[in-house]
Length: 68
Image 1 (tube, rainbow, N blue to C red):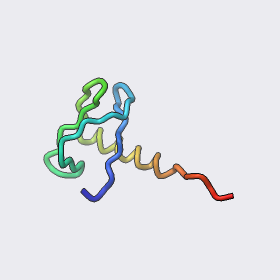
Image 2 (cartoon, one colour):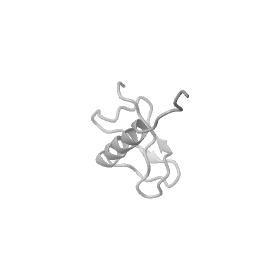
Image 3 (tube, rainbow, N blue to C red):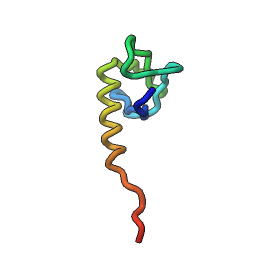
Image 4 (cartoon, rainbow, N blue to C red):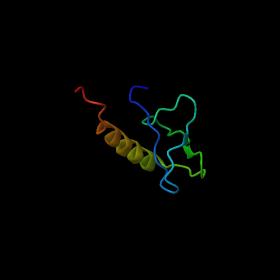
């Protein structure tokens, strides 16, 4: 696994609590079973990858404290 995996928001309940299979690789075929820990929604591959991209973009905008 080379790319970081972030918690992805569920399109049903909005929670970012994913259940991933061991050794999960989001870009590998076949796509592993990914589900929401809260509502048990089963992510489709496009749904998960879209959420992963959105989460990565949001996290890249965060900045830490700046020195004074």
